[in-house]
Amino acid sequence: QGTKIASLIPSVRTLIDSKLRVDLYRGSALLEYYRGFLLQGIRHKGEER
Image 1 (cartoon, helix red, strand yellow):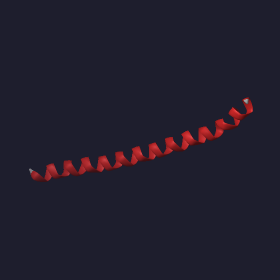
Image 2: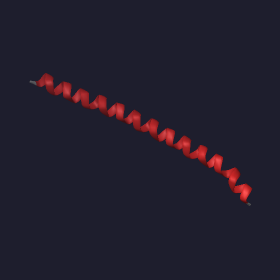
Image 3: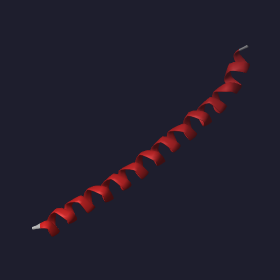
Image 4: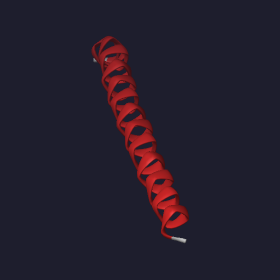
């Protein structure tokens, strides 16, 4: 039984690792989008004056 659990650990670790990578990728993509959105807003405010 102990070996069964030990053989499961690597796959669980890979699963968590890949999920973390996806979350990190999504998070950074969202940040990039949000930053561009904010920069556009600042530019428009500057043009209004």
